[in-house]
Image 1: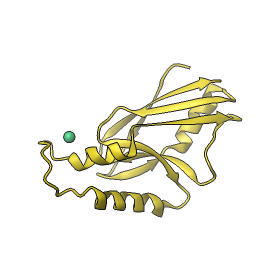
Image 2: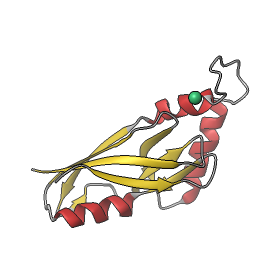
Image 3: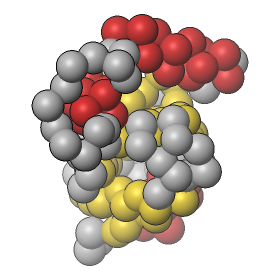
Length: 133
Ligand code: ZN
């Protein structure tokens, strides 16, 4: 399968967008039963993470905790003024790799994949490679 691109338009300055069903749909289209899915965001102010997606308050709490850990008002030097977003993106990371079995991602019952926007709203690209194995 060639590399795919998932484009997500974020609507807020900061948000976590559940992309699990988009990724599962993409895997379904490959027809692969077993393999690996690797995803990567080619941006410096958003990230990818896996966490609970059953209760939306978890994503809200993560954003709130990140804001306390990485406040906007620190004495950052970066002239663009969005260092807090760069730092949060690094804390989340830019990629995830998940095994595929029975044509689906091997995620736990409560796990979902989130695109984490820290400097939106913007159009974000996620590069996705699904490998049959
Ligand atoms: Zn910047």
